[in-house]
Image 1 (cartoon, rainbow, N blue to C red):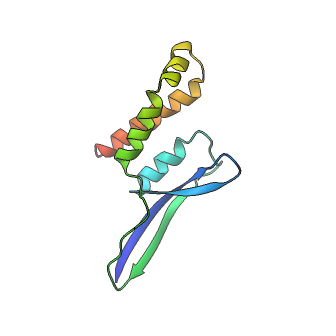
Image 2: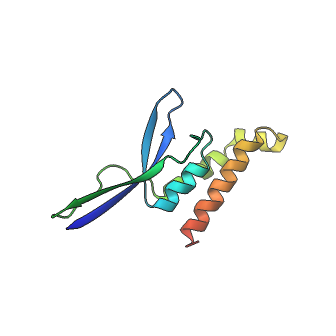
Length: 111
């Protein structure tokens, strides 16, 4: 029997909706939950385990650590966010991004 583990982190759609984002690992999903700008009050990540007698693969997009880092770094390096940082505005926002980027880099480097 072949086993496939699919990790997810639930994101807030901002309009009352929520949606899962597929991730590479439990640690990536946990880091993602810990550093979301709008949290849930409790962790909303987990896994789905599928077993089959035949080989399986995920055909939906799985957010890799490299892709997530690129997205977060693009947001962090945006002109408007750097302007906020320079003025000391929205400190929680850019500090959260710094923590999230650092945690993902540590995970990527084997930490």
